[in-house]
Image (cartoon, rainbow over all chains, first blue to last red; front, side):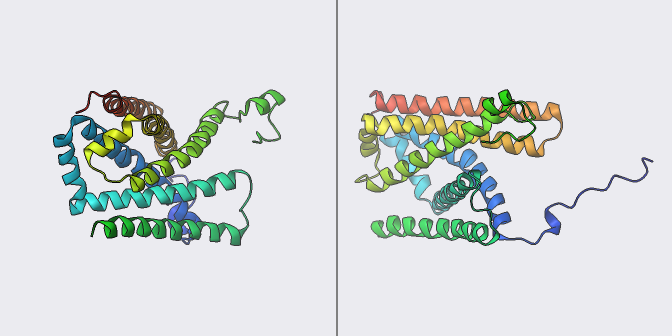
Length: 130
Length: 131
């Protein structure tokens, strides 16, 4: 009987993508990114501050490099996305917001909210500098 | 939190499901997430409100209790929450028991090591060893 592999239940590939599914996987991706990249940058930043003005200049140079800015803007977006979808999780933990329409709107709100907050924050930071 | 109809009264009180463990992980993950909501907003707001982001200004900020204490909390709670989150991902996707144990142990070491490094750097700043 071992000739035929057991049937597997359909996974990610068969479902039509919706906001709820997207936010669910985004929560994992942004959480992973914040943990691995975000905590590494935070630790490096603190070590650089502790090391004195010259050590800090190295960090500052990397942070202001175009690639550094991409990482920082990416972390900002991941922070806001994870924060907003985290709030959504806490609300859903109480048993609320499972109705189809509400659930979908709440999911969309986290995606729009994270992009708007990231854009506003960096427009302020980069506009201030210019 | 409901532990389900089939659980014993003791299990309901202890918040334990059929897996016998995990309730504490789940609850701690929620508690740390609420703490990080506050600490994360504190960090972003602080960075935006500081007059400048040069080394001297940052040292002054992290020498005061209003800077150093939330930063210490952010490090401890941040590394704990990150470890708990990555454990969920490992538990979901790594099915071999040996590999799962090895990966979770590695993550534990990295989180404790990284968190200690960050705390040590903060202590150097806060207690004045930094220039």
